[in-house]
Image 1 (spheres, rainbow, N blue to C red):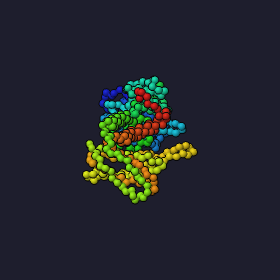
Image 2: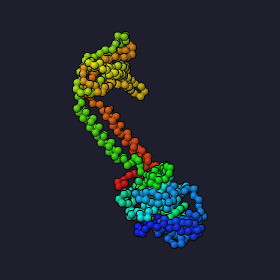
Image 3: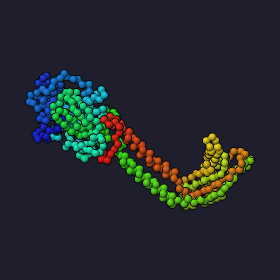
Image 4: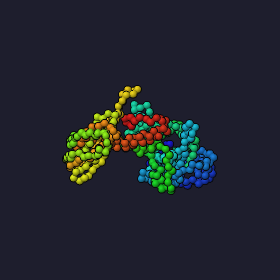
Length: 441
């Protein structure tokens, strides 16, 4: 595409002319600024700069099965300025014997000049000619980079594009079958495009738009076609927030660590009761549940740890507990099993189980308490000695581990979704392997 013409200084004009080939009526909305116009009757491409509309190119009228989504003469507001759609072209690139089509719309405002919209499979871009030439960047990686207005754009793809359908007016002399080498560089949500034809080079910059925004801007009926896949400069719904997510995770994780350290430092972690009992064999009916002596839990409401230990060998014991407030009768029920087995086999010695079991009861108010204990074991077992210890306000790391995982899981999920999004984007490029981000991106 040719650069935009100078800002018009005269009053906007619309002119009605006739096609020199078929005599059909032609309306020029960008009179004095359009370089070519397509006759809607016969499809001839005419020189809009010529008073007699000299014929540039003639061809058999093509009835397109791919009409414009935004009809010509539709008016809308783009970036706060009113524009009219005056031109439409379909362009095609061929890769591995497959044709890929996209559409470009020429927008015109008599005081602002030309602007463009491009659409591919429901993805839209608002395009304008670059204000200055981009500068090639070297030294960052082997992949080509361009610097435009301080932003680094990474090479996405290069292809040969052919114009295969046109309608309306254009600020350059459009031709059917015209080909151009197109190179795209991306910095989502923007794309930097270079077009090269014989003796001419044009740079443009586009910014991603959703179909919903385009439909709203031009007050189009119905809903915009759904976007398919991930487009080259489509902004990631996850990537832009990843740094913030990980910064917040780090801050919250540090706060959680500080809480754990502070609690461990100031926790009383005091033993308030300890005693060893024996669970004898014989008649199981002789072994009923029993209660311990009363012990005091002082200070603020905090956790209580009940640890049971036994040096049993190749045996087990199961203990039903209840921590009971002597004054209110409120009870906390829990149970633990201790089992330990060992032996030898062809692989050598082995062990299974543990000599102790611990349970932590959270937020137990201060007061006088006792334990009700009901032990169980195999009938006819040998006597089992076990020790019960009660500690008040003990450090508990597992709580903070769960909290850490609860903070980590969303950060990992968002990162995974962001990486998956970028892999989908770059799978359509000349660099299908997701490029590693480097300093300056």
